[in-house]
Length: 394
Ligand code: SDX
Image (tube, rainbow, N blue to C red):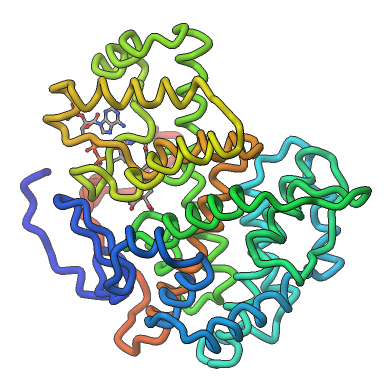
């Protein structure tokens, strides 16, 4: 933008890198994990199968998937001292910093799986993360509502266990709603990877210093928290609720404020650094939203407001000329809310989905002998050389 000549940062630095994991065509609205279109995976696969595909590069055989699933199920428990970690957080702590703190702390409890160049350690930290981050996420929610923690039940699948740990109580059995479990599984698939987005680039940057996988994923959680990134799904719900409560559901006034850029008003859940077309994930979420709410017996005026907003924006020159379309965050919050998740858990759910993608990118980066430590250069715009001035002369 300053007319500067570009400079080649070199591949596998932080400014640009080669990767074989996810392909996006932003103009055509294409997203493929290891070459397979997201539409087919959302329709026919499962979150654990997609996680295996992203991490190991191929769809698993049944035996490989069974082994991956059983390895993960054996690591859902947290060390008791880590469980006590939650006592130290304030009740009203946002679950995202709780998640990133507890994930970072994993490297203090599981020191036998830190070496990024030991294959067994990398496998062990992979399954530990895939299992324990779901338990940590559920405990972050329980802490925020002052309810007792449950222990995982390893006879359940990863998603079912997470729902039980989140919404179950020690005093009574928790009945898994298959519609809810399937909807969560599909949403996790849709969030599982997305090329070099802000949080994945953060995981690669931190990992490029040979920081262990737990530390690198914790950094990714923190990057995702931002409202321009994963925090957008929470911001969308807050925006829709404001339109409902303050503007009486009138989207016109809000859209005018966005177009006038009043107080930096943005149409949250719209726009994308790469997609200059409809985000293919948003299409699938929108299709599911109606079905899931009906199946859960929930009708939510916020879904109607979201659809009115989309219809108005997609017909408005301001958004069309700026190629602003709904992204993955625009409809997800309405579904999470219908499931009973509080708004502050929405970005945690995004992090759970993105976990296998982050792991896959860290493993790809650390296993590439060409990888250099991430060290972008800068364009210096400060003062030219000058001398120190004593206090008496200032
Ligand atoms: C995710 O990278 C990824 O892959 C991320 C992600 C993933 O899976 O990891 O897809 C997940 O982060 C999705 C994005 C979630 N964020 C939001 O929904 C927040 C709202 N969106 C914007 O903040 C914005 O669209 C970004 C940050 C997502 C993208 O911004 P860009 O492409 O850098 O666009 P820009 O800031 O250069 O804006 C271009 C123009 C500007 O107007 P003008 O100065 O030309 O007049 O478009 C306007 C912007 O003001 N604009 C918006 C807008 N987004 C851009 N105007 C109103 N509402 C918006 N949402």
